[in-house]
Structure formats: C-alpha cells, structure tokens
Length: 116
Image (cartoon, rainbow, N blue to C red; front, side, top):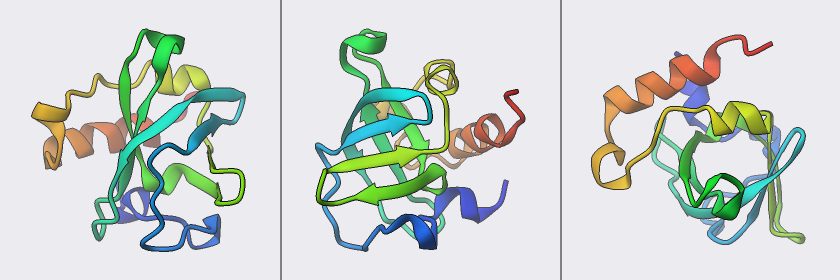
C-alpha cells in the first residue's frame, strides 16, 4: 500500500495543525462517529473515530488518505468509505496498535481492496 493512504489528500481542505478532535465523521452513506484522536505524522497520518452507540463504542483507525473533505466551519470530516467498510474494519486497540507498522499494513490492505 502506498504512503498516499497515510497522508492527507491535498484537496481535502486539511490544514496542518488543525485540531480535529471532536469533529463529526461522515462516511459516504451516513454518520459514523467523532474523532477521538488524530496524527499528522509523515506517511503515517490517521484519525481514530469513536463510533459511540452505532457499533457499541468501538474505536476504528482510519487512514488520513481516505479523508476527502475537512469542513472546519461545521467541524465535520468526510471519508470515502461506507459505514459497512468501517464497521467491518480490523479491530483497533489503542494500547496495542498505536504506531504499529504491521497494523497499518493490515489496514492498508483492508481499505485498499475492492469492497464492491
């Protein structure tokens, strides 16, 4: 998987240094939760989303390259993933997976495959 999956899209309106915690996250087919944490690490950027009651408080790590638009005024992030793609993503454990290159590789394979 290319580093682009782990970098913010230039056209997403993301400005480095913007605090995204608390922003609502919208999949292509509906709301999925709020940003719990995010990084701007070179070639390793991501957001962690707290899905709340939607999938029983699960946290999911989403590569920054899936973000298509950051709306600072409305405090929303839009991703090019469906709710099912996110719901079925590999389990995330912040104590185990934060900064783990193998886990990022697994996610890159998952989000990079054809889900149609």
